[in-house]
Image 1 (cartoon, rainbow, N blue to C red):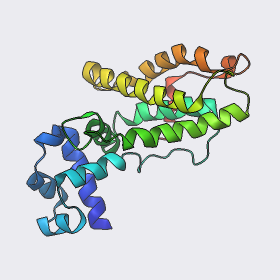
Image 2: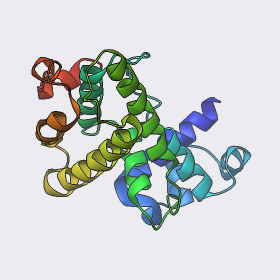
Image 3: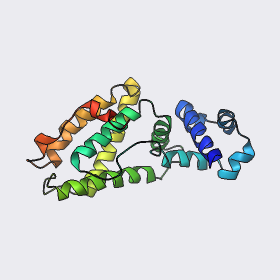
Image 4: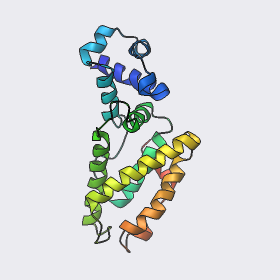
Amino acid sequence: MRTRAALVCAAAEVFDQVGYHGAGINRILATAGLTSGAMYFHFKSKEDLARAVMLEQASTLRLPAEPQGLQQLVDVTLTLAVELQSNTLLRAGVRLAVDQGGPALNDDSAYDWWARRFHGELDVARERGELREDVDGSEFAEVLVAAFTGTQLKSQISAGWSDLPERIVSLWRYLLPGVASAEALPQILLDPERGRQWV
């Protein structure tokens, strides 16, 4: 498993730097310090390796194990915003997920994983009375994934993710009034620094 982890880590580094089409197997192997035999023992192709990076993008994150509701959902998105500034595996996984010319073509499994994670927080928020009655948790989880994806992409292009935590705070300022109950809304803290609590 150590060899596989080294391959995924090296691939993430190369994909993060040059994207899917710019990444060659030889460069990934050189970065990992491994042979092609080691690579093909674990992965059938570059596409297979890229898919692993895409699906394992969250594996190094220190996120809370149990859903806690709306505040934690906000904090998780802020943590992702902070992590995208320096976490190579997350950054590479996100880059691959939005590249429709690579392994993400017609594959939304990475997005589905995050939507399920967000939906778990929304289920708890519903139980706690933190959501408006008309909010569909599953639907909003999908909206949030799409909104976060677009926001991080704009931040990457404009500022190399340096302003992403502030952009996510802005996103929530507009989203929260549409989903949070009147009682919960004033209690939700929107502070970019909350994204550093699990980093």
